[in-house]
Image (tube, rainbow over all chains, first blue to last red; front, side, top):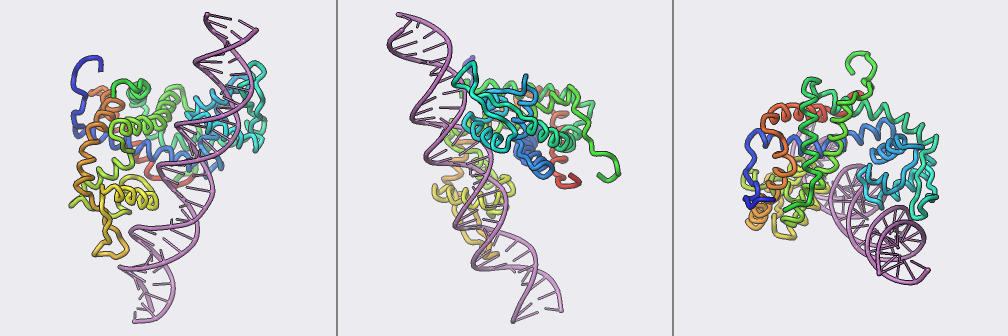
Length: 161
Length: 161
DNA sequence: TAGCGATCAATGCTCGCGCAAGCAAAGCTC
DNA sequence: GAGCTTTGCTTGCGCGAGCATTGATCGCTA
């Protein structure tokens, strides 16, 4: 807090309570549901899909492990192992960075791209069906804006308690 | 699909993409953030908090393990172990159900209630700061409604693919 | 240029979680 | 009421994820 006011512990009113319950349900159910869809339809976990996607969007299909970890919201250690697994399946190639000998370049292979292209429509359909299409088009702009405000608030963590 | 149309794999437009990205960030960041807050402020993981809350709201502060698992969105096996841990700390008591010898009643103790009451303001403040307060009051009704539509869509899983 | 702190990745470890199997009790059907 | 099925919980196990440590390298500064 920048001022000396009492921390906000006003109980949630009925409407806030409702919104909160659904938000909580959302962040429990959504990941599971989307992951299951992708698993069933393309035999691929979301973490893999996300990593491949970010690689496919990167210049030359190359990213460093740390950078990839940041974008996928995984820890560095986890990404090391994920990349190892992908490399074992020839979906990516690991190569010592030439410019920085500490770093490792992760390069998407043709096989990896193919695999991603196969999974893409499955995931897209899943996201549409489960999440996007249920949002009435007219409500979308407002919804996106509110959501963004929440994300920003989540982002500025660790001030006060 | 009930009709014979092609599955919806229309790529997301710009606005949908924006909303989707923030939703995805939300369900990654929100649980972490709220869990960290509660851990730091009350030394309690969210799963424990949720279990204790549901118990405190149940008649006589009693719930069966399976029922508790359903409400907290955990598997039965996980709940068995969680309840064991809570029982080890005397926050709950396990007792063979009298009406159904297969079942186990989980009963919130005075100590458990006390512990919950200590954690409550911490979590409330966390939820307010991170999530609820960033929502402009005027947008709340619409937001809640849209969110609920999404939850419903998430709920009716496993039709088509 | 020698040294020091910061950064990148790899590795060992632990934890949370679900699944599958097992067991006991309950319920159902003939 | 004997057997099959279902339900409720427990237990063994594996997987995904983060943390802490280590080692190599980089960059900055005296």
